[in-house]
Image 1 (cartoon, rainbow, N blue to C red):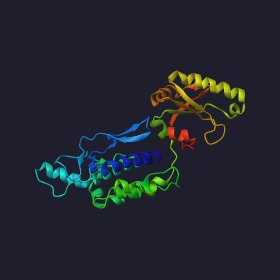
Image 2 (cartoon, one colour; image 1 turned 180 degrees about the vertical axis):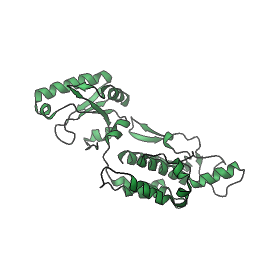
Image 3 (cartoon, rainbow, N blue to C red; image 1 turned 90 degrees about the vertical axis):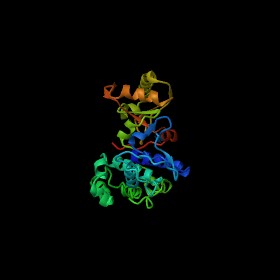
Image 4 (cartoon, rainbow, N blue to C red; image 1 turned 90 degrees about the horizontal axis):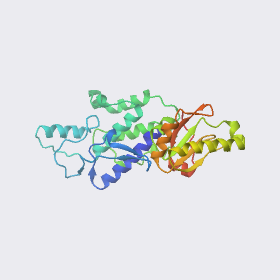
Length: 288
């Protein structure tokens, strides 16, 4: 939920800006969303099919599986050499992002589902079924906020589909989700977090603690310039080692080298950590 929320907010902000300027991306799909490790955000790329709203050349838009119903119709008519009476608008981007986020939540590719007669007949019921069948680790997480947001993005009628600016006002974005450990392994940042290194006894023994921290710093310096190192002695984050590198490339090299390495008889677990949270001194109670 954390990574889905992060991606949704970043791409909706990109779309809100793009649509405000009067442009349609027209090819939103997973391959055109990239993670920027240095800026710690998801970015929208590849504007090869983009067009100015209201000034669209007749052309084939959007990728199979992420194509809005009105784009499907326009592409069909264009291929047949027939002029469509209704042009596609920025609403096609909301549809595509809705499918991307539904795939992120469900863990499934949905191409065959969204092309089925059942989806065309009642996609709202299929979305309900996906959310009902998907096991969420913490049942208190109000996943229905995401469900309702996706339904508003996947309305068959483009006139009734939500806008990017309105979608950003969804209650889904008011919930501070904690990242799963898998999220922090996937998304590189300049901050590395090392787990399973320090025991309670070593935290309490100042001499032993300083020796271990010096050893960690010496090892981590092999992979790049260290800006700061922090080890909380109390929860949250008790015993975790946070190393801020000068750039994400060095942090990534360290993560790859240190993961699974033995340190004082224990196997090291190395994940990245959001730089913005680290700078604020905010330590997530990470979901495992």
